[in-house]
Image (cartoon, one colour):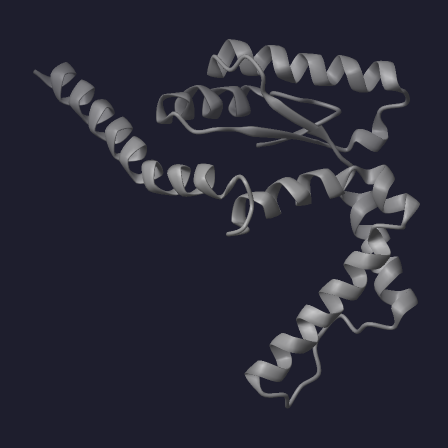
Length: 173
């Protein structure tokens, strides 16, 4: 769930989180625009505010919170691509397999350079990407958790919708 560092937990965000709380979903909080916070104390205050609201709204004791600068990450990625001379669009006229190989090679080259890039590291976006990759990678330790979430999501959503529908029908009687 992405919130802004300059205004975390707007009224609509709070309402949405209250609504999805019944779904039993794991929520990871990404605080964007962390580069607008001037020091570690401000970052800690925002992190604590997000964690406190997660506890109060979602009944989550240990919410995962990442402070990132999406703009910083994007600028770092663009700079690395430019430095490596990698085009933003793959070559045209390639077969599907060749196109996939070209994209994967570019992805790997950019990833290797980003790991060494101070601007990208400062954006803290690498931590979010690593977490996301761990959930979609079949060989990760989080694969079982990812599968469990994937399988229980439709059940939890259906249950929430049926409960809400039941409450609406009861009010009409």
